[in-house]
Amino acid sequence: MATSEQRAQALYFVNAPVDFLLIGGLSIAAFLYLRLFYSGERTGDILTLALQLSWIGNWPHAAATNYRLYRSTENIRQYPLTALVIPWVMVAGIAGSFASPELFAPAFVKVAILWAPYHFAGQSIGISLIYARRAGFDFGAVGRWALSAFLYGLFVAQAVRYEAGLQRFDHYGLSYASLGIPERFGTIAGAWVALSGLAFLACVALRCRAERRLVPPIVLFPVLTHFVWFVPGARWASFGEFVPFFHGLQYLLIAWSMQLKEKLDREGLEPSRGYVLSETGRWGAMNFVVGAALFYGLPELLARFGAPLAFTTGIIASAVQIHHYFVDGVIWKLRQKSVSSPLMAGLDDLLRPPARPTTAAA
Image 1: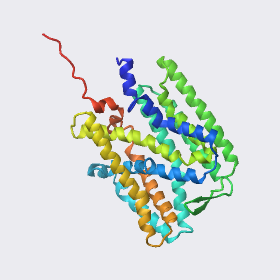
Image 2: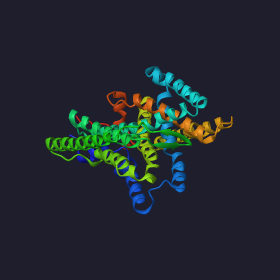
Image 3: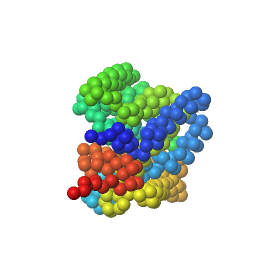
Image 4: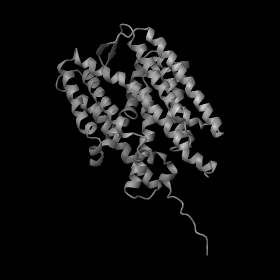
C-alpha cells in the first residue's frame, strides 16, 4: 500500500504550489484582481498585455500539439486524416477567406470562435480525470457523465448567451453575426448547468463516503477554474482576454511532463536534473519559435501581398486553432495506455532513477 508521502508525490506533475498555480490559481487571482481593481472593459492596455502573453502561453501550446502529432512517422500513420488531410482543409479555408472576405471569412472565423470554449471544456474535463487517476479516485461512470454534462453545459450556456438574438461581433476587423438563437434557450441551458453541477457534486460526495476519504482538492480545481472562467469571468470582459493564455498554461504543464517522460522511456535515458533542464529548454524553445512563426510570421508574410495585416492575422490564427482542436481530439485519448501511462509520472520520476529493490542477505 502506498504511503501518504508517496501518494502526495505522485499526485502532482511538479508539486502542489506549481500545479495549483498553473492549473488555475494564477487565473483566479487575475480574475479577482481585475474584478476588484480594474475596469471590466477591454482597454488598450488589456489588449496589449494579452497579445504579449500570447507569445509565451497561447502560441507555444498550439505548437506543442503540432509537435506531438508530427514528431514521428508512426504518429502520422496512426492519425492520417488529422495529420495529412485536415491541414489541406485549413489551406482551403484560408484560400476561401481571401477569395471571399465578406462572406466566407466571417464564417470561417466563427467556426474557430464557437469551437474554442468547447475545446476548453474538454481540456478541463481531461485534466480533472488525469488528477483523479493519479489520486486513485474514481468518479464512477455516472460521476464522469455528470462532470462532462456540467462543463459542456457551461459551453452551451455561453454559446446561447452570445448567439441569442441579433448581435454583431468583431474579430481582427472581421464582422460576423450571431446565430439568432431564441433567448429562452438561455434559461434551459442555465437549468441544465445547475442540475448537472449538483449531480456531479452529489456523485463526488457519494464516492468520498464510499472510499472513506476526501477527494484531493487538485482533482476538482480544474472544474472550479473552468467555472470561474465562464460564469463570473464571462461577465468581466477584461478578464476574458486572458482565458486563452491561462488555458495554454494548463496545457503546457501537462504536455511538458508528457514530453519528458515519453522521451525518457523511448530513448532509454537516465532521469537527471540535467536531462530535465536540457529537454525543457529544447522543447520550450522549439514551441516558442514554431508558435511565433505560425501566429506572427505567417500573417506578416501574407500581409506583404497586399491583404490587411489584421485580416491575415485573424484568418491564420483561426486556421491554426481549428487544426489544433482537431489534433487534440485524437492525441489525448486517456483510454490509450500509451497516453495514460506517461501522464502518471511526476517530477521525481524525471529527476531520479527508481529505487532498486534490495535483496535480503542469505
